Image 1 (cartoon, one colour):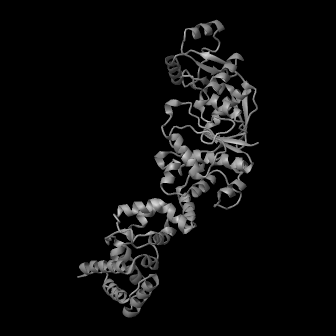
Image 2 (cartoon, rainbow, N blue to C red):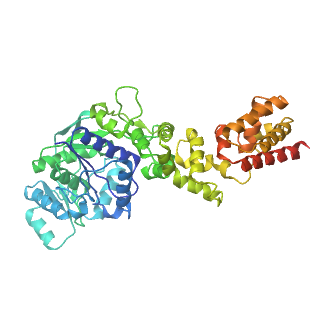
Image 3 (cartoon, rainbow, N blue to C red):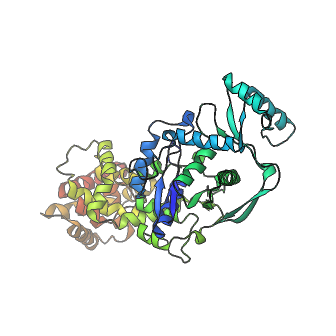
Length: 490
């Protein structure tokens, strides 16, 4: 059976690259009727961040990536948190010691620091010099009995090479001369990533290790461990890095990199997943919009590229905008609610009877074609909610401080005042009647009305705006703009 895993460390936020890794593991398992396992690798206790695990679990749940086994779910291969598996690792390290595949190292930190400094000064790749590798059994016994602080290292072969058949990158060869005698068990009794990772992948029967290419240099170390234990190797697939537009590694210095950032900014999980799936994988044609079920059906490692993938926010915005526009009205209102509430707070709107759900939904429908994320709602709804508008922008003054503005606004106010009911259709009819009465048409007419209603030169259609406002609000805004025009035109 195909069994994949996502094994993050709880050292902070979930990177979007990590979310993509989780997604590819999930898709591959689902495509092959397998199991997707979540494991928390927390052996580096110094870097553990409070709340990171909870945030990770919440982000995966939000994104629709559902593990079959994991910390909150359980399973036959648990526990799924490495700090709860320490005795297992000690047992396997003892097995390596007994088989002379590993050894005790008593080198103090100061010696290792001096060794690294000496090697660096001579431009020698820093690595352990195997100082403790050939200590006699009696010497090791004596030092252990005196409780001398120690770690346990793996005995790496002194010659030869390790070949890895990667499902994405093909055959890769690593000379063993480049591989250090890696630490397996630290002085605090916790295993290193390498030991715990291999032991857990074996015991959890992981068939495919799909992870980021930053782990590629660790792979020969893991292969050696599998061989030392006499275990079958899983299949390896190393994903390309996510890159900034300038081809540098995606980092927070150039933009948001946490999946949580995009969640808070109002990106839909379906859109983010769709976007991430296309960063390194393609369906073989020009399709760009996929549901999760469609991704499961189409996904294959054969179509995963080994080249770095550009994380382009513009593409994400385009995809997210499509998803927003396709939301049913009730879901649109539900997803937008936190951002609408923020907009109402900013403008100190207290009349919630006026701004009820029906009116708020109409406002959302009016602006949704211009939305790329829900976080834009406070800015794009500002003109609806503001008590007063600013007319200072040059593109607004072009129309309001114009000889045609006063007759346009005066006539429109009179025509609306004569109407008992104003809605989108009757408002547009009134504008057309202004054209008939005073002979002004085109941009001078319509842009003057838009400037008066919104204080902006772009936005929703005028009939949508008028349908959201009531008659009194329309008249109040037109009158305010007329007074502004009079004050500047004399």
